Structures are given as C-alpha cells and as structure tokens.
Length: 96
Image (cartoon, rainbow, N blue to C red; front, side, top):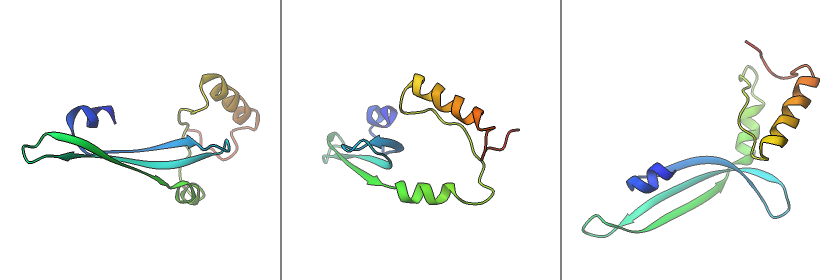
C-alpha cells in the first residue's frame, strides 16, 4: 500500500483486522487518490469492506492448497500456532 500512496495509484490489499470485541476478521482495503484539475492529489478516498465470510467459505473448498501465512498476532503467537499445527500432525495441510 505504501508504494501506491507514494506513487499516487490505486491501492488494494487484504488484511485481518481485530475488532473492538477482540475478534479478527478479513477486510479488503482500497485507497484511491482524488486529484485536482492539474493532476495533483488533493485527498485520498478509502474504504474497508468486511470479506471474512467470503474468505472462510473459500477456505473450505475441496482441493484448495493450504499454505502458511504470517500471523498477525506477532512472532511468539505465530510460533505457538505452528507448534500446535505440528503437534496435530499438520492436519488439513498438504506437505510437499
């Protein structure tokens, strides 16, 4: 997103964001520059769309490959999660 902000182009990203109640949900973030007649950026328009249900539905598709992704809870929480997955014999993961 930083490249888009610096270059003044459309920015699209997906992230897990923690809500006030502590739950994490997937969001699609979009940022788009608003320009004046001379082409200068005068402001940014942004939107965050909750796509958690869509993401979770796609995760349950048969044959979809499972991959490890960085964990938003930080490195200690990531290591803990990896240890739990390994202790469960990598259930649900296809190892190559």
